[in-house]
Image 1 (tube, rainbow over the protein chains, first blue to last red):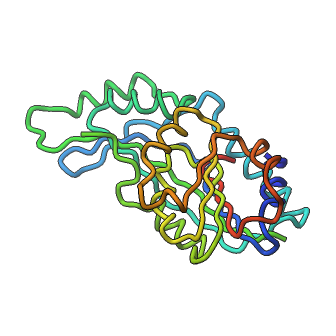
Image 2: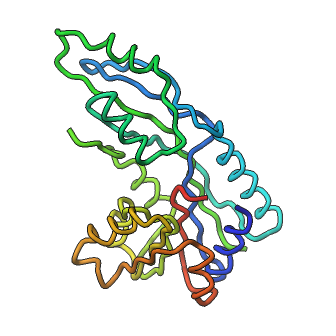
Length: 137
Length: 101
């Protein structure tokens, strides 16, 4: 990761800007929305326990210390993935977030919330994403 | 209902805020994927280079690139090292690491 940041540094013009967007170390949550009300089902686990995001933060800290980049602004935003059903969400995660793990309890909880009186129902994953603006040193 | 990604466009708003002005800027997006985020800001930039090593996502980006962005957005099926080895240094005003660090 440090090597990637060194490469980005070389490609940027002096004074250029790097915007880094990556998942924070907080686990993403999977929720059900039932008639406008949200129900937390579980956290989305990862096979490597979100280690790469900690490594990304460490790599960024290293290149800052070496003066390759300076932080100009840091913040975060919420990223949502909406699906109609838990099966649809599983399918999407399998294809696009290969190391994500949804425990079986999620399916059970999601089905428990599905009752005949429901008018609106949906499943979503909520991720807190870090965004940082760096200036090339 | 299809899968909806970032329906509130929080990511686009955050990028436009954090990148500052794209006007007249040369942008490198590392990990552009299927172009989902690229198409949302490319109108503002002078030129965008998107790279991604994932063949499937790259194909999707090529096929979904809006016609009016074809001259402005170039796409390469390459990882960062390979791209850098073919590219001059000090080229870009803005680099975006898009979920790829």
